Length: 325
Ligand code: UDP
Ligand code: MG
Picture 1 (tube, protein in one colour):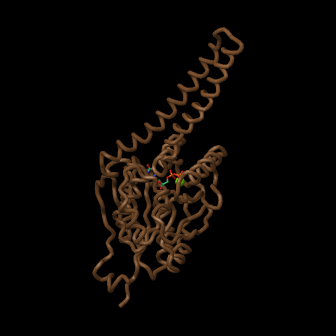
Picture 2 (cartoon, rainbow, N blue to C red):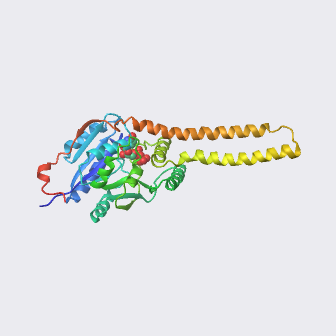
Picture 3 (cartoon, helix red, strand yellow):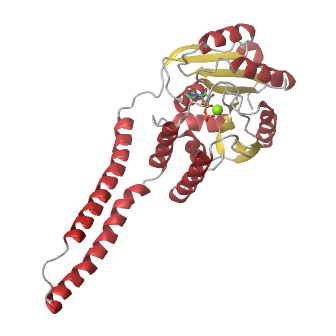
């Protein structure tokens, strides 16, 4: 008895009606070539305001491998990916962007590694493509900070483009954090990992929906989701300031006792008050970030809402001819 394994290509899409037909033709070419697997193309329409929904309906009427989810509004890429993971039927899932930045040509190499027994085959960008210099520098600095402060190894230059075995998928699905930093979670779950290198293409249509503020938000998510070390800043600053204050106290007493200096030090006083005030606000802000996270998690709201879901139309009874092992 032979079981044809199913590979799901999971694509979160937000306003991607222009790219989706192109991506679909590239994918169906690949699927036709690799016909020893069954394929599902699962597209999650993340509340697009263009006609992505109509495009999907049209594509699905021509290709029975397509399934899609329309979310009730824009929930963001992280939530869209989770929605896709929850609905993916494959034995392996390949997550990729809709904007053709992730090369379809890397997928066969990923599958080859999966066949060798790796559970999480992640795409590693060789270059970051056309990106502003400052953004590249910030990203480097951010990753080195994150590396140093978290116990898990969050890999730089590794995005969401990857192949996950069903085992990893189940692990990812069982993490129900509402504020997700998926990139970190992939590393957190562990399993046997293997890189596949790829060159990023430039975006075909439209512009990236991740502006600097979005990235900053995501960066905060990464830090607050994976390390509590910023909370320690308050104690460290407090310790250093107290030590300095103690030394200064001795100097002031000594001066008064031995030299009898008159009362002075208005500028010193002002500086100290301002510096301390700044440190206090900073640390309150950091604590606030964590409290905000606790607040959001305790609400236990679902991370996304499905408006409608159309499954792919392969006949499970006739396709499934044996044991998945
Ligand atoms: N995306 C999404 N929801 C959003 C924003 C983006 O599903 O709110 C999708 C988008 O359609 C694309 C992928 O996430 O398939 C990556 O988005 P984008 O290309 O804008 O980001 P970048 O390539 O700059 O990381
Ligand atoms: Mg992109």
